[in-house]
Image (cartoon, rainbow, N blue to C red; front, side, top):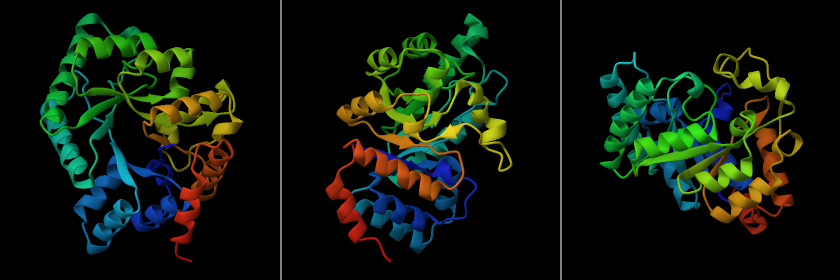
Length: 290
């Protein structure tokens, strides 16, 4: 199974890129999903050590699977600045050897968007896809609340109306479950566009507010309700077996405390489900420095 470590899990932790690379390899991750601010920092401060870490990652059969950021396509945004940021992310993608950039389809719930506003969103998405297409990069919109991809139906409309071969989906199962969708149906209908998955869980719907940006990105925000994949309200077992068959990369996102230990436990759980290769883990552990 192609499981990546999302560096967003370490947004409040003091840990170097080199430490993350070696930790990811030791735990059997097949890649790393770079949060945009982390990717930009590494790129702006290119040192010999960082270049060596990238070489280490690639020579140990790992890669950077995606750069995750946000491109503002709202009507009030300066689209020139948005396009410039898109070009910057494309440059980062090239530097880190990935062909995926994650963004969101606006900042409004789909139910309240007028046809004219929706047309504007899809037009701007199409223009960003044109930029990405010049460099062979896919632009992935994430299924997420308060965006045009907050339900299955609206996500399919965005894909159809944008109609661009570079537009793809980062399927976040928890958020479609939050919208009351049938996840099996989502996987079936969105499969032609899905290029990446996000994996996280919650103990109960009553705690879903924990993932609101103002809370989850705050170092002092509550983490109540955030649980490991196997312990939450979303049943991931059949989902994970489906992902395993597709070969499409998926990132573990942990927004709670103690990410080093929790992500290790998550990978241990995946091994028990026989979704992570034991030999891969054994060989990785042999190369991990004491």
